[in-house]
Length: 561
Ligand SMILES: [Cu+2]
Image 1 (cartoon, rainbow, N blue to C red):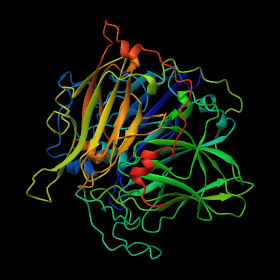
Image 2 (cartoon, rainbow, N blue to C red):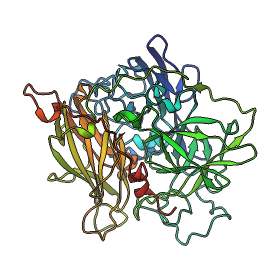
Image 3 (cartoon, protein in one colour):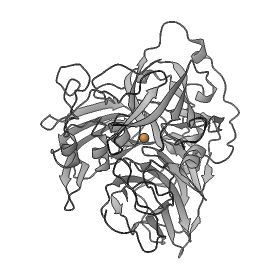
Image 4 (cartoon, protein in one colour):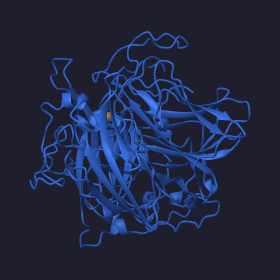
């Protein structure tokens, strides 16, 4: 759905239903009956989205609701903007990656609750004029019920148009939006395919999902689908993508999974092909002033849940079979099994239909960013946070796991939606460094709403990644090293839109739902001049990329080439 005359009006209804196999699915349906439309807007455009809640109290959400009901924030006006009780049929929307205000009717998930019987709830905001062009997305974000709704399929892509204005290398290319979702296994009791090596152990983690086998094979924790075509265990029958022989396209891939990490490759005759990365998490790589046709060629791309990669792909030659796959990801001894599996076959034929959308061949370059490059701004403070996990009853290995993200010095505590007390207070106009440790034995994916950050250090060592992300892997602790694994992030609080209360959390949604979330309050810029953040430094000489781009994602999720 494309904006017209600067406005995109969308009516969505969220439905759920039980399938024949007993699984519960969630979906957004628009006024024409289409499912989870791609929303396309230009910077400056107005989005008016009406969301109707048609959820029924069925399936795992109904089962888990006992004892989980909590009030949202203390305001008790009883409207969708505050004071309601969360129920399994409550919903709302988060616009992942957009720098829009964290307030009701825009991008608030702390107070906003929409319930069945409400009139359609209006989301209404402008895409900021300076929002980088790229792939963003929308999904529900009711604490405690996020996983069940997203795993059920409730998610969709939002594209801020104009990537060809940021990076000339993609001008004129046909483009394809690929949304990869996960879901409960369709054949949970099936033995692995006979073509796979025998995996010696088949265990379950404390969440009940197939645990990491460390082999790249075995039963996955979840099945995947690509644009709603399921690719289920054990045989992974792939979807089909048709391309003209040798044609170059821009693939815009969203990992909308609730808990599954991806490690994407395109294979021709089993040989990995170059993927020309141009944008990460909605932001073109050359946002920092690198050349206007910058492309970083990789052979595989790690994509945590919630993250996006946009890359140039070349179609296979006639008669050569292509395969789009995700390779195994090492999620740690406490993590889920994310094995090798196919997603789609790529067939080359001269008569292949063109994708529905093509980028403009000649485009006016974007104006340069208004603010100095994030990497050249001095942080006003360095904070330390850590991921950790604990058994509810330490004496009972079968008791539920509690998940925490804690500011160093505070007491580990599950996120409390009723509290309203921020864990961190920051000031608009500033830049901060956050060091995030992982003290658990599984991989986590750190995400913060409203803003992007830059990865500075990985495992205590500087990395040369002069680009932005909104989701990053924090590698797991092996129980032996003298220090916990960590990342150092430069957090950008300069945009005035982000003043208010919002959240940061692990983007493995069962971790988030079970407590791994914290709240930050960004106060308006104070009257006193803040020299550290106003200092204008130049990012004229673009840093050279040393080593593989996405190094962190790759290093932390990928074992064996
Ligand atoms: Cu996590």
